[in-house]
Image (cartoon, rainbow, N blue to C red; front, top):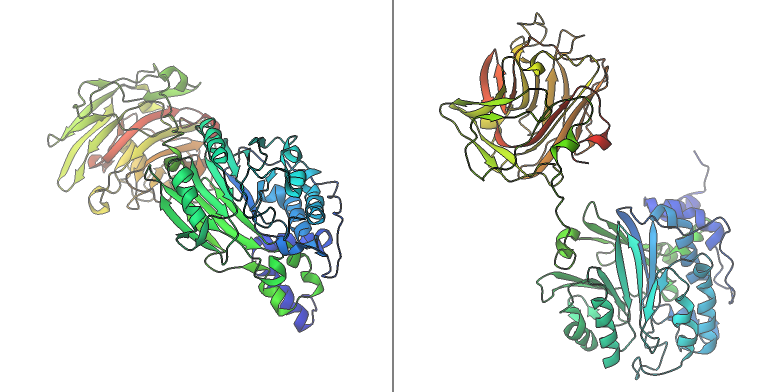
Length: 614
């Protein structure tokens, strides 16, 4: 345990704040440290070892946002140290955070003077040296506030005009006047567009912005400008103009970011397409040291359909080891509801109006017949709701065809519903009940080769399934997706319950998948348990045995409750297999209530990459 003085220990704990971000960022002490008295002017070179190379396919990536920094570049009062610390943070944490872009929201300087712009421009060379993609835009303090984007030459345009960005791979282009730019980055396997708009748009500026969006019709747009939201749920007069003339009619704009006003705020508005547009105001110039070049981290997580937002000061954090006063400690991270929050966005649904994801096409049965396939059943090519009659063929060519068994005149019907990654665009709808026992299921013929298979060298069982909203554990639990008939007792294996079947992939009362079998090398029952799987959603389950161990996968992910005991093969009495049915003590005991998609059995272990949902 470290021997810290109480004061130092308290400061260290405050600096840590329990945040993974901050603990990581303490490595920035050497890169970001700067004293308050640092006079100015020269940006240090970025560490030679850093390179900016975000992962374009990862579903987790970070957009960094920096609002008004004007008080750091104000006449003779110029101190680039805070902004340099924030820019070094991007370089140092770029890989861990998968930082894809930085957007500055304007008012880089207080007076828009040549010396102020030169100092700000010098600081941004830290990013230029590493090819980091970023955008800036003019605020009312960077140019004459009474002008729009047709104002002509200014120190801002000389320093941060299109010529600064033209060599960057993220730079898309600029309006003829140079005050509006757009930038493209790839993240999450798709392209995103940042539209960086001037303090005030002219008619030409609006026309240009609309043209940029029209030329990228399938690209989601993040609009940045200096003024838009005034406070929570309120647009400024100019913000209302932007909404009326640009945002409302362009569904691709899903997020706007602006500074200018304070305190921070948020709003959500419906556009003409009926979709949410998230409008965020972020500005800290009224806080300690003019905001200390605070940055916001917009962490996109496409798998969770969430953007997690945090607000931190790398400059203060970088000096934490030297001891901070009370005010500085308060500014390391802002944790109020307007500065640290999460935004839930169903990205696929939100973008479907302009960039719909085409459904995956069905794949021919021949593609599913991997070496070792001993049975493959699929259920397409039939009218919804039609009764299943006759024979369901085994497409593996091994002769393991299925026939319908009805209990109390129960029904079994065809359906076009299917898992989005299922090879066949069809399924079977089972309508089973336990009390009274009623429904229909499928059964292999008495002479089917599958009946006697013992899978000593390993196996893979796969199935797609969906349970309806009215699935009830008291009526529907423990029905089998795939079951082997014959009991443990009949096979001479009486340990555990001798009336249980020899093998079953059933649905527990969770509901969740359970694989319960009697291996060749065990007297008792070996089980793999999956987690609960929600109703009304399609699931893929696979059970894989490599000749000695069995692993269950749900949606391609291994479950937690996979036993480590050696498990070899499956005991057989040469009796049929069932789809949708479950026997106990040699008699049908439960029938599935739900849908069953493609089912495949392979006499070897398959890797996840070879599963049917890949």
